[in-house]
Image (tube, rainbow, N blue to C red; front, side, top):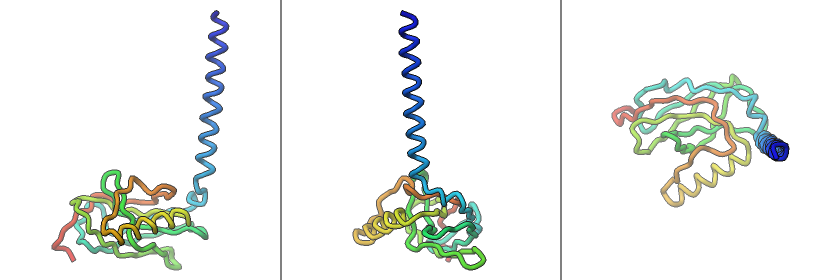
Length: 161
């Protein structure tokens, strides 16, 4: 009897290991490996800064590959709101963009994401739906995109221009 259960447990472990290996292989094949070459930063605003509803973001990005794009997003807890325009680095790999933040949260983060064409389409559809209804639904992350950098602790100061 002990040999029987040892064989069953051993077979179960082998099947489980094969399933986990298969799932991990599928996840890595779905992930866009060109993202691994991209690094980026958000240099402005600084962490814990007071910003107005409209503020400038800037930073540096390297390793961009053809077919990839950059997006800014505001984050509050685990919710993300991509911003209207894509970020385009100049010949020195520097980027700069204005962010318009109409949210209600007093404290938030701004992040820069790298995305591919599939993600661009999803973000575009989400933005279009928000423009047409006047309500931008909450997103829990941006599936398929990778966050490159984030500045935390930003505070809305309506007296700041």
